[in-house]
Amino acid sequence: MALLKAGGRWASSVCDTEVIVVKGPENEVTLSCGGVDMVEAGSDPVSGELDDSGDGTQLGKRYVDDEDTIEVLCTKPGAGSLGADGNALQLKDAKPLPASD
Amino acid sequence: MNLMMLLEMAAGGFGDRVAVGSLNDGLTVKQIFDNAGAAAERFRNANVENVAMIDITSPSLPICLFGASWAGLPFVPLNYRLTDQELNALLERISPSIALMQPDTKERISNTLEVNSFTRDDLITSIDPEIEISTDWNMDGEDTAILLFTSGTTGEPKAAVLRQRHLVSYILGSVEFMSAGEEEAALISVPPYHIAGIAATLSNLYAGRRVVQLPEFDAEKWIELVRSESITSAMVVPTMLSRIVDHLVSEGPDSQGLPTLRALSYGGGKMPQPTIETALELLPDTNFVNAYGLTETSSTVALLGPEEHREAFSSSDELVRKRISSVGKPLPTIEVSIRDEGGNELPVDESGEIWVRGEQVSGEYKGSQLTLTEDGWFPTHDGGWLDSGGYLFVTGRIDDVIVKGGQNISPGEIEEVLLQHNAVADAAAIGVPDQQWGEKIVATIVLHPEQEVAEEELKSYAKEQLRSNRTPDEIVFLNELPYNETGKLLRRVLKEKLVALGDGSTI
Image 1 (cartoon, rainbow over the protein chains, first blue to last red):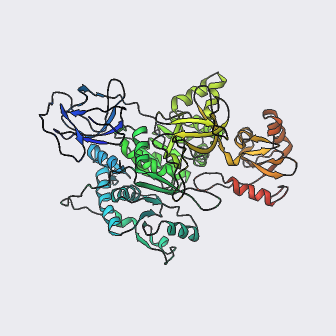
Image 2: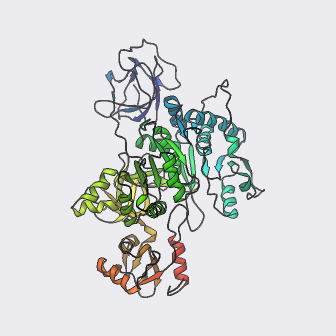
Image 3: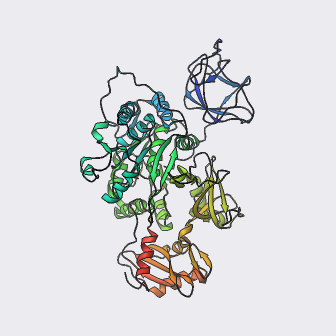
């Protein structure tokens, strides 16, 4: 369990996925990827087996929880899918703003 | 957070796309990445505190910008049009530095300054693919990414500090990764030392959109480039748009228009209503976006989108029609609040100072206290109001407000009316000291070529549409109004001239 601070970087323990936190809830949560806990980028991975049954992660896409309290951005894609406290994170619909500069 | 994270993602996602230049000989995203790595080495080895750029825009801009972030040094684009004395004064403030400049600029730099220089050609090198570049940039969002000297016309220019977290938040909050199609291309004609020039470089790269750079704006060249490079989007300041519109009009009925241009965004000053109306007529297939932002807010904080432009134009509802002159709604990541002089929030439709809050808002100047309030609000010094639908209207700098007989009068309101007159090409209302009223309103007017109008006629025209205390007391006709090169009206220059002339009858 950890506090997800905006700008914080997390890495998968079992695939290439890396994310950056765009928005985090006030309470502590456990991020997972491929069914195994993620670690802060640069830390040693925890052991576990990759569950690659999901769609994996896509570069540059945003992922959110059902309550819309967590939003992460995928900065490196991988085979594992993201979760928070055991619930799958969903791909967020992109609503691009018109280009202004 | 570091801007390099964005470039690394882009290089990983679409490294082979051309990032800057023509499709046949431009630099790809991967080449920008590799060259930025080599530039970072150069910057680190120079043992300096800042990376400056005293040059017109070129593919060196993204390389220097990202290379500086890679090396953990602030990037400081300077205005190459400054006088030697002004330029040296700024260089002294960022010394020791390494600076991109061409040989003719180097001759202008005082030899007492510690400035290590390099040229455009030095930056674009062939990278040995065997050498592994270490991606060792610092991810601390507190690092300064950019220092931008604001164009203050009095006193010393202030250096706005934009940290890595401000710019990364701006991009993540306003751009979707790789959202541009491969055929898209943006034309950048604002200089590197303007926040819009920096923002355009970053946001187009992250969206995967090729950029074509026009170093020194010229309407004819701009139009030529849109046509030859199949440009799909562009950003212009008001003076640029009015010259583009004039040029398109001069092409007559046989003009081929700008059929590839899907989106045109404008900002950086008040757009005269007739200019935007003519532009909409001339470019029926182009989507218009009006953006409002400041250097201190990492560019755009509010925008009026294409749909809202169309709605405002076609609506019969006066409230909706009026929104064509608004800057639209705040970005989803930005809050806007209108405050009185005591900092108290004002209700809808009441005019006050615009305050903004959000992750991208810096409000910080080098060497002085943070201007953000304790709870993160930045007082912009711009006046304005919000309507009942949340649309933001900007009236101009609070310092430019005319105080006549104790009444606060926004020059923008007067100018808007004067610009509607057929003979008037440009107008500025200035408060000039007056014994009786404190200030009187002097309207400076530029007429269209071969048009004439009497002072009294203009006054009564204004009187019909403005409250009586807002009618100009005097009208002064000029050949042109003073603008800086990025289209900002130099009101203080104008005011000084008027004051120096006493009654202001001739200049």
